[in-house]
Length: 138
Image (cartoon, rainbow, N blue to C red; front, side, top):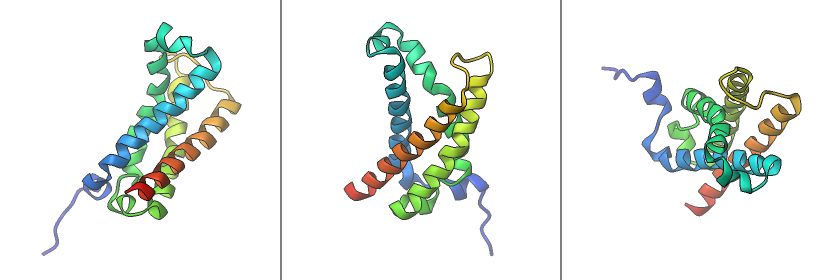
């Protein structure tokens, strides 16, 4: 008799939890570096809410796309060879969602083509490096 599992049950593996925590930290760190580049280090303490809100659209995008695209599937928790491409694929979609959210009046910052390109590339690199390091350390 076949066992029925839901779509998300096939996409989420508890063994990938450390990867998920690192992914969120990598995304937040990426945004923090950008905030510092554009506003200076003093902005982090002068406007901590603005600093955190800058990352929210990308974290929302990540929380939507990562489970759906398999970033935390059983295969993602097994090796960098599978985890890195799954993470990058999820980031590409998450960036599109994050930019769409920033385009609305709900969040400041707007969307420019160069910003989209920077986030696509640097986010892919950040997640790829993090996931590779994770498997080298574990």
